[in-house]
Length: 462
Figure 1 (cartoon, rainbow, N blue to C red):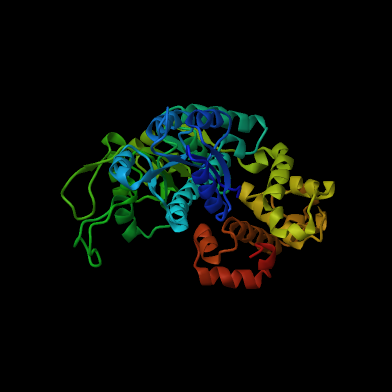
Figure 2 (cartoon, rainbow, N blue to C red):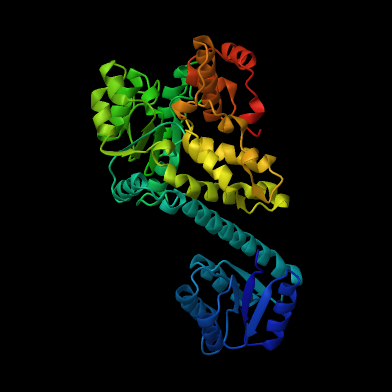
């Protein structure tokens, strides 16, 4: 982090030099002046984290200088030096916004202690600004990679969604980047400085999700030892992202519908109605129209959610974006193997990626490149560094002419093997999650992994 910078203003040169000597022991870069007017001129050309000024000075006193500082350097922390007789004035100045005062005469610690406290606050401000900048960059539209016509259409709709307060429904296969799109819409909306609260509707157990969403009242069930605010309330004045919204049960769909209609809801076990102001963005990889036909999803809720629909194309439908994505993801992850000095990827490796069907979409591509970065000797990722299943010529979605004839029993086993691999990739190697995606028991999946000789090392780098 850059050194902190301080400006010291006092009409006594000896005081300026004394304060400067103390501040330099804290590794602060110090500028001094004995004139308030010159101090104003310096502030017009330079920025400072901290300004320390004498309270009583000719022509322009410390309070008058502070009024100028509020316009010239509003982010600077302002402190005053005051003689014992003017401490009441210093206290009054603090009420006006001045950070603290240093008594005159002062000991080194009487300068160091308030200055350390002030710069700790300034350091936190710097960190928050840096973090906010990183978040804004990560979730800007530029962070979503794609130059295909399909993605240009996605960007067009995202821009309209970001300038609107309407509900958004993002659809697409797993791994297409639905949460990234939701965050980008939020980060470019009028609610950007408010909370973005994520709820994975498919990951929370059925008996807990109502309490998680809407909160509960004390004593409403065993273990409810206090009132609890739900995630809907946490998102008040911000954005609520409902991932896997198609997994909500019919009773919860009714409660969500009321939130969308008028912002109203009840905590579990409570009788007091509450209201929130939230912008809802929902996402699903399910076919909600089919779910409506099967009586699993409410049609009125679908139309409330589907005000601005954003459909994300699968990676296989925008293969021209793969080289761009590959370059971006290598840049993103090569720091994990800095000693290899990875500079890029061989053309043969890119061609192999282009030939693969990527059932897990961008997430699977990212996992594949993380694997390759872990296994390559560098400085270039070769075709042989790619996960073995990507190089398997019998992968589903490949050219049918290249698939060798085999007994139907073997073909079925190969198909099952590829589907399981796709689920494991989608789940990041988590067998329980993959079993949920495949709708089979975990023990059953483990047995199939063993029987089909699936190498888990080729699925994930973990």
